[in-house]
Image (cartoon, rainbow, N blue to C red; front, side):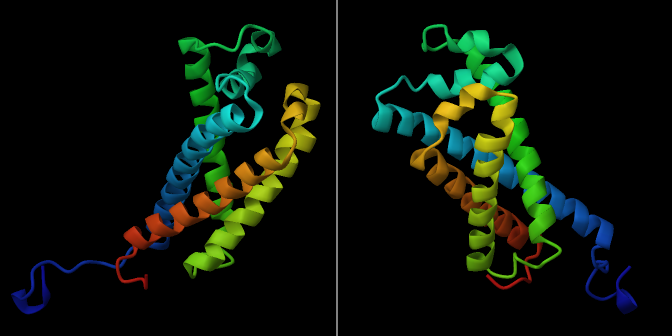
Length: 178
C-alpha cells in the first residue's frame, strides 16, 4: 500500500532486468520498423534509379532461404516470394536492432537523439560492409547491389533504427529528457 495510506500504491523503480528487457524490446522493434522502412524505400529506389522491377529486391532476399533459382524467374509479384522476403527481412531487422541496442546502451550512445542517430548511421555503414562484402561469399547475387543507393539505404536504415530505439526508450522512461 501507499505510505500512511496516502497516494495509492507505491510504484517500485524498475529492476535492472526489467530495464534490460525494455531496452531489448525497444531495440527489436526499432530494427523491425527500420527494416520495413528500408525495404519499402529500397523497392522504390530500384524502380526510380535503375528502372528495374520493384520485385527484384524481395526475390534477392527470399533467395537466402528459397535458393538462387528464384532470381532467374521473371521479376513479377509472387505472394510466396514476397512473404518469404518479409519474414527474412523482418528477422534480419530484429537481429540488427538488438545488436544496435547492445552497442548503443552500454556506451550511453542513446543519451541524446543526435548521438544515437550518428551511432545508428555508422552501424548502418558497418551493416552495408558486412552485407555486401562478407555475406556475398554465401549469397553472391547481392554483389550486383553494391553502390551508392544501397550504401545510402543502409546508412539511413541504421540512423532510423537508432532514432526509433531512442524514441521507444524515451517512451519506456517518461522522466527522461526529450
